[in-house]
Length: 412
Image 1 (cartoon, helix red, strand yellow):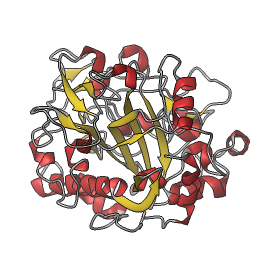
Image 2 (cartoon, helix red, strand yellow):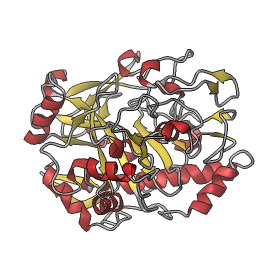
Image 3 (tube, helix red, strand yellow):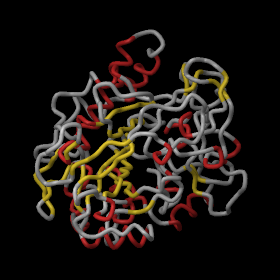
Image 4 (spheres, helix red, strand yellow):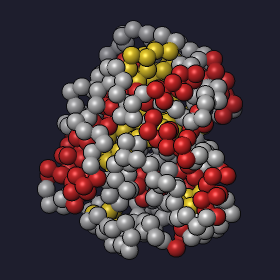
């Protein structure tokens, strides 16, 4: 898929209302409504259901097929959005980049929907000089994004020709749940894989998954060049298949954003933790075959009961919502600002590895730190983050986006 299409997304509406793309019942949802859901989590199943339905609605929005095509492949909504380096023009050649902070080092990209891209462009937030001026002027944070903002981080496993058996079968490691002892536990440690048939038609073997069960794309020559440059030794060639294995979806519908993450699952009707059947049964009927093959976890709060934005404590039960293909590989050294607390069941936990993390806690610490202050916030496992924490002094908060704090960052 040619990257030249990416800059065209500015012509789309902020809610991604493109031909053929389904939408949730309401996006953006009001902050008051979402806050009410969060406040009611401990007292009613309906609030949980509302959050799960909203998360799936966002998934249907970002993965809905559009009327746009590239190199014979239909583009999904998120594929028409811009990458951070394309906000002010066509991005660099090749859409895939290496995510260096992940132990399994997959390939993928961050994309901004039109509302997000317009805000970055209008405020100059893709320029370090702008951020430095805001910091020097005493601003605590960048101008906030609008409620119509969506940002995704998509992670792919590259099924290169050299990795195929009989020229068509690819072995994909699959998540079967977290280990009993908290630890770094990435795809390289998972005991089982499934076969994916990359033939262009239906698979010819029972128990083998077809390419139609995945959101995927075939690499262009530019994609292959960038993948090889970003991650030497990849051996990518034009025509190789990139399988979407994980995606974070963040919306700025609340001050601390909503966070939902999705990953490919062989049995998407009964996915293991941090998802489950309760989430799976709420998938909307509008999802197509490929999009229905993904599990979901959501974090609309850092802990239960929901702590305040300022002046709270780390005494609640942590919310775990991580992506097995993205965070599960992270160890204690990858999450240096972790703080011990409690697990979802109320038992004491170190909360310092990827399987004890959530997106909100980590992204709350996103800051521009040009002076490389040793006290500046860094990545963290599940914990309470006070947005008035003294750690933020001398830095510029970037409205939960590491991709603003560091244009080469590997998180949205």
